[in-house]
Image (spheres, rainbow, N blue to C red):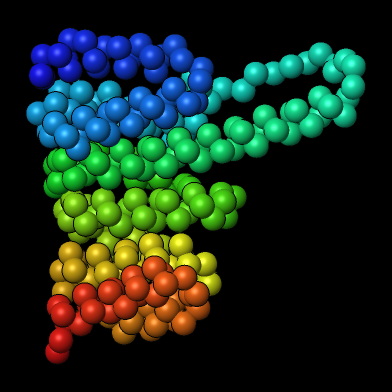
Length: 244
């Protein structure tokens, strides 16, 4: 099976990514790589890790071929209103696919962290700064939700990375803990639970009181049952480790 992956599948995927303009096709390629990591394990991805990480970097930087923009300098002809409406629909489609590509990229990051565990740290050191850019105010809330969820689960699978990035991640979580958005609060509370569970007591204890307050506020502000459940689960997880 590894020979098939090395000699046939990966070369084909590389060719697709270097020639394909369709974002839908690129999304499928990312899903395929994710499935390889999840189903086949480290031995199928380790030899191709440099390429995989480079692919994710290009997508996060929006430098992939499928993310290029065609420039049309000609004046529109015919019914300008119809063409404007068509252009707006195309822009909406692009936004949808950009969100899907980010979702697939973050899913792939999570799959690789599960596959490689603490060995994923060098990869995250390359990808982390690019992911964090999506937490800026210029990005939509859905981007921030995906990235926070991605980082939380990555740190869960790769605790060595949490040791390095603990302080930065806690600040991200506190910054995003004042919303009434259930999806955001669900991921933020999960991230806080991971920090409590995976970080050393020396790192987490100074933040214990503020974390409990933040989770309580998110529980109160959230209407969605899954967000409230995550908040309660986070408190239980924290108290199980820090009973004293």
